[in-house]
Length: 65
Image 1 (cartoon, one colour):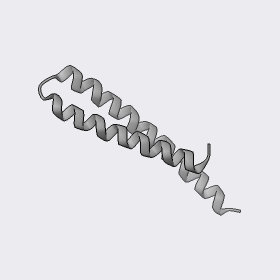
Image 2 (image 1 turned 120 degrees about the vertical axis):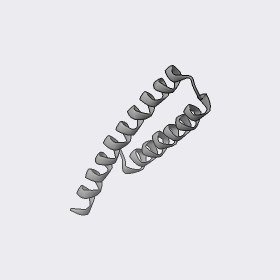
Image 3 (image 1 turned 60 degrees about the vertical axis):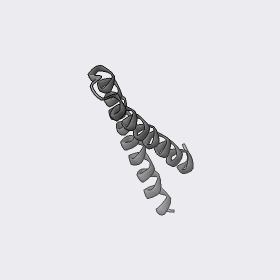
C-alpha cells in the first residue's frame, strides 16, 4: 500500500465514523440501533489505528533512505 492510499483510507474511515456518530445521536432512545452503530464506530477506529501505525512505519522507513 502506498502512503497516499493509506492516508486516504484513514480519512475515509474517520469520516464514516463521524457520520455514524451523528446518526447515533439522531436515534435517541433506540438502544439496539445505537449499540450497532457504536460497534461499527469502534471497528472503524481500530482500523484507523492500525492504518496509522502502518503509515508511521512507512514514514520511518522513508526517512532511512
